[in-house]
Length: 174
Image (tube, rainbow, N blue to C red; front, side, top):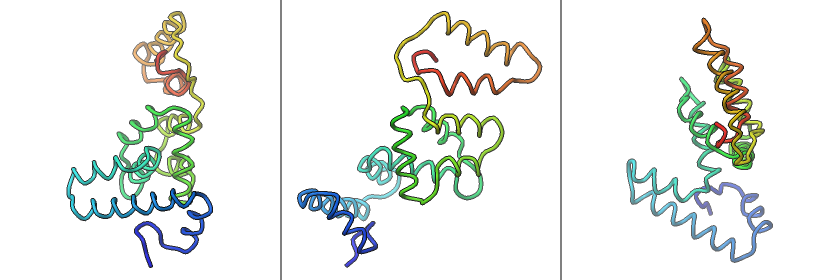
């Protein structure tokens, strides 16, 4: 017997060992609902509904994988996900990515990007951003001056300054 997404006996054993029987029934119902919806819907609406049924970390991991697979990189997807998630969410995404693809997210980001963009993504992937909600006006002015001096004020751009600030400051500070 093959249930969508469960291809091996080990999948059933893992499910039985990790969840109560109520959890197993709920998971199986969810799998069948997912398959029913997939067969009834199409296009963008199908994509939306199926995405809403997945845990956020699973959806994000799949989108990141799609963004780095094949020809070309979908930088906008990488930026959207990697810059807008908390450290905990990034840790969950990394874990799910490893489970789904048996590869490290960071390794795939390194393999498909380069230069300062790659360094920024790797920094964000490490999940070391300050997560407080504190905004330091003096620091904001200093950071703004650093960014100006690293960009507008000079010929060329010092991307490392941008990376350091973007990957480490909390959202309120940015």
